[in-house]
Each structure stands twice: as structure tokens, then as C-alpha cells.
Length: 268
Image 1 (cartoon, rainbow, N blue to C red):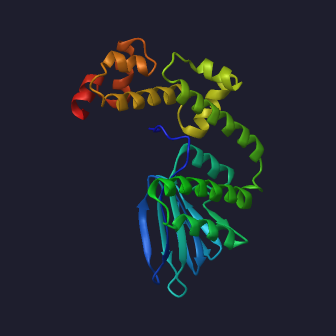
Image 2: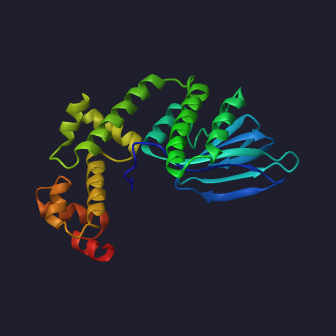
Image 3: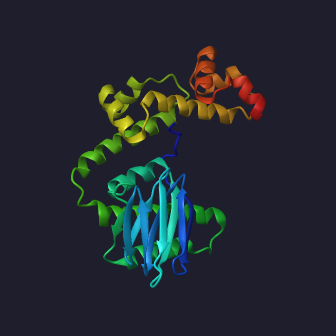
């Protein structure tokens, strides 16, 4: 099932590690993206039955829900920096950088460019809120650098950029207007696309149809409102774009497996 994702990138953790000879990690599965960049030494990375020999100046991407394994070299163990992140836009940026589970490795001819970004990420001099905002900015700079150094040679990039731009606009429209009586036709009209074509590219990049995404978005917002005991189920239904409470309850149960009242009783 595709979950509702933030439009923005979110940095969850970052750091640098000097690995001991032969130090392994995995096999493991993550629920977010992680970029490793090797600053010194070498090691191996395995994903989808492929083995990649990685050395200083190279990096690799770990994708969500993929079984991966990596290990430092016995003689020349690597030192790497990493950053973990998630968000719908992050996934789009990685596509533009030509990075995926099928093509997870990149090389930077001037390693100091990426090393400088990682060094700023790892610095912990600011107050927490300031640091969180700065990390998001630095993560976007890192992803833009990867697009520059790794994505420029990918065929058909401009066409894919256009499609991804339409999807971002469609999702932004839904997040802004989910509380209103909007239809997929309204979304397509707003972003200037044929409704059938919107459905095709939306499913290609998100794994679900626009209608499925809108329903899950509304139900996710409804779940948040359930925590407010002063709001009735009818109030919540209207707040997330459903005038018909019965239809709201039907969609809620389809997504969550419980009717709204049962969900509120268990999670209230």
C-alpha cells in the first residue's frame, strides 16, 4: 500500500564512520532512503543479487524495502558519510539523478563538493529547530549535486522532469484542497492535463491512482482530527471533504479496516 508522503524531503539521520576492517552491515531492509558517500578506503555493496566494488569518491543509494548488504574491505576499510531521508520529492529528485535500486552507484570527480555538504550536515552547533531546517536545505543541495554529476547524461530526462512536475502539482493541489468537494477532473484541469494521462503518469511514479491517493490523504487527515474529542464524526467527515457521512465511513473502513467510531475508541 502506498502511504501518504510529504511533498518535502525530510532528513532522519546523518553521520560519518571510520569502519573496522571487514565490518559488515546487513542483510537489512530499511523504510527510507540512505545515501552513503565513501571518503576513504573501499568496500562492497550488494543489492538485488548484484555486487558493487566501491572506492573513495563513489557512493551508493539504499532504497526503501530493498534487502541490502555492505562491508568494509579487509585491507583498506572505508570511511563514509551517510544521510537517511524520505519524502515524495526526494524520490523524484533521485529519479532525476538516475539513482535507483537498479542503478544505485554514483561517482563524484571532485569529492570535496559532497564532503563539504556532509560536514555541514554533521555539525551540531545550532539549536534543534534551526538544525532541522538547515538539514533539509543541505539535503536538497546534496540531491541537486547528484543530479548535476550523475543525472545529466540520462536519456529522456527532460520528458521525465515534465511528468514529475505535473505529479508534484497534482499532489500539492490535493493537499491544499482535500477539504473541498474536488474531483480528479478538477485536479487535471488545474494543472492542465488530460485526466487519462494524469492517471497514467501518477500511477507510474507513485504506485497508486490519483483517486486512491486523495482518499488516503483524506483518511490520514481524518485520523489526526480523531484526537480532538470536541469534533463529531460528522464534523470530521465534512472537514476532510465528505458531505455524506455514510460514504466517509465506508472509505474510512476500506483504508483503516475499522469504522471511524471503532478507530476513535481504540486510538482515542
